[in-house]
Image 1 (cartoon, one colour):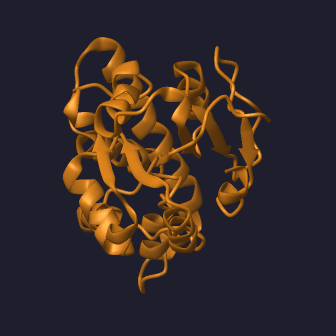
Image 2 (image 1 turned 45 degrees about the horizontal axis):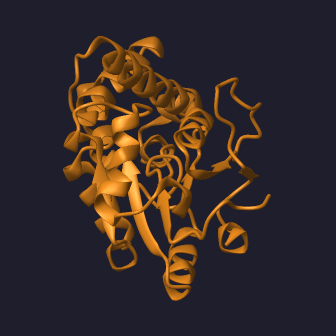
Length: 229
């Protein structure tokens, strides 16, 4: 794929792209006394993530914005209810672990390589600033990032165009100078329609979303990002 301009800035979605959103449920299930959770944690984690995203989209459509932390809690409550897990202590454990999500193994080396190539690196996320600060700090990524951009600055969740505008406002760039990377097909497609060069990290091998924009690159993980540049 031939790029239309020189890429100066790599922007990453956070949850599911840099940070493993399944880590909270997986770690909780590994604790002693969690036999019930151990049997259902993959489905619980998938339901939690799905409802978290669905609630963000619905709130964007209706204009009922709230923090991403609120939709994270609401999504967990729905998922726990679906799986019959009525345990307040487990709920608090899962929510606490969400602030300490591990980064995917390739992330630190990737970001270090991009910085060595002279690129700006940033996060653009639905996450609230305090959630993102916690995740970045827990994963030790602070030194690699030039900016951590949150939708809270515009009061609407992705894929609203106002969110993607935050990149140009922060870096003084045109859309064609940005490589945007997301594990969410709808996010990568929407960012492509906005004008970014986009890479979809399709870890699960899912079909392409039927949206006006299509990502220019489809990857199985983040390791080959430097080769695109």
